[in-house]
Image (cartoon, rainbow, N blue to C red):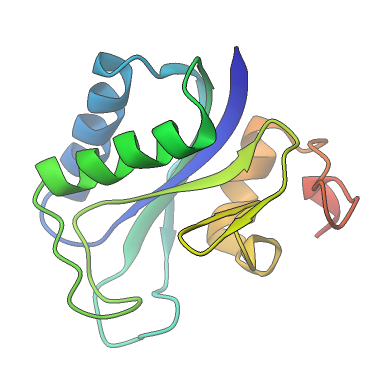
Length: 146
């Protein structure tokens, strides 16, 4: 089994329902949710002229490779009707792999740990709810110390 941390966010439509649907779809597709963080209301990141987000994270176990996990998450976003108009724009659901075991992956379309996650409170707070002692495999610091 592989341990992964997945961040989620939404600021379009029924935000709570978007989260519930996405998490159910993850479980329906064989991703076992171990823990779910608190849900945080957060200001938009990057592009500011949009509604507030609901953000959180889940700790999951999966038999999927990191690449397979990414594909499942992208398909969930697609199945939920996500449209990518521009970077950091509004979205009904966003699912990002933050950590996958303690692996470091640097491919054009797959970067783990998630780049710049250590500078984003909307990722760090939920991650600390789940595991404040998880050590970033590149920066060698636990989540709680960022």
